[in-house]
Amino acid sequence: MATMRMSDGSAENVLANGAGSGEATPGRGRLSSAGPAAELAIDTAHKAALRSIARVVDETAEPQDPARAEAGIYSMLAAGDVLVITGAGISTDSGIPDYRGPNGSLKRHRPMTYQEFKHDPAARHRYWARSFVGWRHMHTAAPNRGHYLLAEFERHGQLSGIVTQNVDGLHVAAGSENVIPLHGDLSLVRCLNCGNVESRPNLDARLVEANPGYLERIELDPSAVNPDGDVTLEERHVDAFVMVGCIVCGSVELKPDVVYFGENVPAERKKAVAELEAASRGVLVVGSSLAVMSGYKIVLDAVRESKPVGIINGGPSRADAKADWRWRARVGTALERLRNDLL
View 1 (spheres, rainbow, N blue to C red):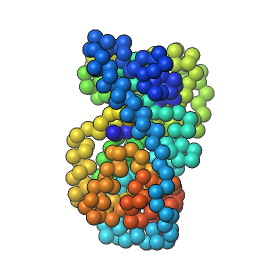
View 2 (view 1 turned 90 degrees about the horizontal axis):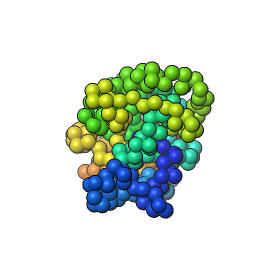
View 3 (view 1 turned 120 degrees about the vertical axis):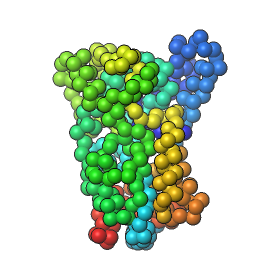
C-alpha cells in the first residue's frame, strides 16, 4: 500500500469506516452499472487505505546512546554511496507540517483516499477548493538548511541519491540531483480522463481567473495548512468554488500527480528505486517514521542484503528494531553535526 499525499479532513464524515450507517461506498452512484463486484473492490481498497492511514508507530527498540548513533551514521556517510530516505521531518523547518509528529496534521484531519478522490465528485471538488487556498503556502515554501546539507553530501559523494516520500520538490530546489519522488510531485496535475499533464502554476492561474475575489474572502492561517497544501474551509467557501476542466479534454477529473493512500507507486518509479538500492552501500532514514510500506520496504531490502541502516528522526520509526544506528534528534541539528565532522 502506497501513500497518497493529499488530505481532506471533512472526508472523515463520509466513509470513515467504509460502507455503513447508510453511507454510500465511494463511487456507488457512478459505478452502479458495473455491478456489486466493482463496488466491493472499491470499498475494500478504501478500507485498507484507512488502516494504513491510521497506523500508529510505537517504540520498538531501546533508545540508543546519541553519541554512538552519531558515530555509526558518520561511518556510513564517510564510506559513501548512502541511499537517503526522507520524510516530512526534513521539511518542517520550511514551514510544512509533518503527519505523525507530536503536532502532526493527522491529529486534526485524515488524508483522502484514492477511492474517495476518484469516485466521489463532491469530495474531489472539496479537495480542489481547499487546495486552491492552501497551495500558495506550499508554493512559496523554500528549502531549509537540512535540504541544502543533503545536497552538499551528495556533491561530495556521501550519498548515492535521495528517495523522498515528500511531494514538495524542496530537495531538487536545494540542488540535489539524484532524487526519486516516491510519492510524486505537487507541481504537476494529471487528467484522470485523458492523461494530460499540466503544471500546477498553470492550473492555478486558470483557477484564479475562474474564481475572482475568492482568495481575498478567506483568512488563511498558515499553521493550519496540511503537508499537501490544502486547508480546512467552511462549506460555504467550498460551495462557492468553481473548478476548471482539463485543457485537452475538458474533464474536471484532475488529480495532483501524487500517490494517494489506496494507490500504487508507479512501476517505473519502483524500478528506479531498486536500481538506486543496488548501487548503494547503506540506507539512512531522515525525518520519517516509515509508517507507510513503500518507504519501509527499502529498509527491509537493505537488511536482507546485510547493508547498514541508520535513522535520524525526532520520534520512533517503524524500522527502529531493524536499524544499526538510531539517532533521536532534530533533523537539522543532526545533519549540521555530521557536516562538521565530514567536510
